[in-house]
Length: 128
Figure 1 (cartoon, one colour):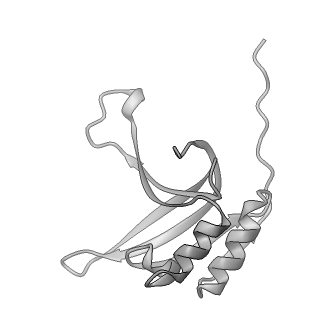
Figure 2 (cartoon, helix red, strand yellow):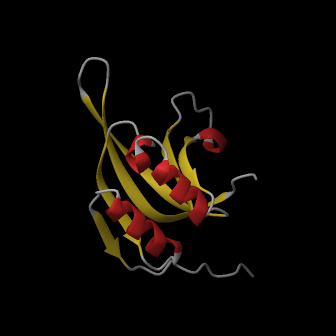
Figure 3 (cartoon, one colour):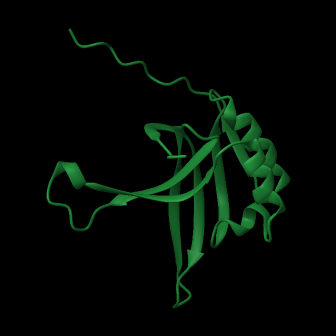
């Protein structure tokens, strides 16, 4: 199955990692609306950008195809915490998206603090 995601952000995850020198680096991961239960990506500026078409890099961090895949990941060695390198310090989920209810339950079960909010996406006006 190919993973297709949109630009619509459904939540964020803050991941703190230590590099080889012991310095902490913080990454803000985005959860995007997709054809999966969850698609988690890291979006960062492209250092080799030559224009607007390649301004950003999108790196897939994790995905959960469906609830069964999420449960299998929970049962794997390290559980959900084993998916992310480093520590998860903050999770924010927009409860407008129904899949976030499922994710919230599993993230809390994994021991993470989850902040929930509700915000409807902006609708774009059709061009005439």
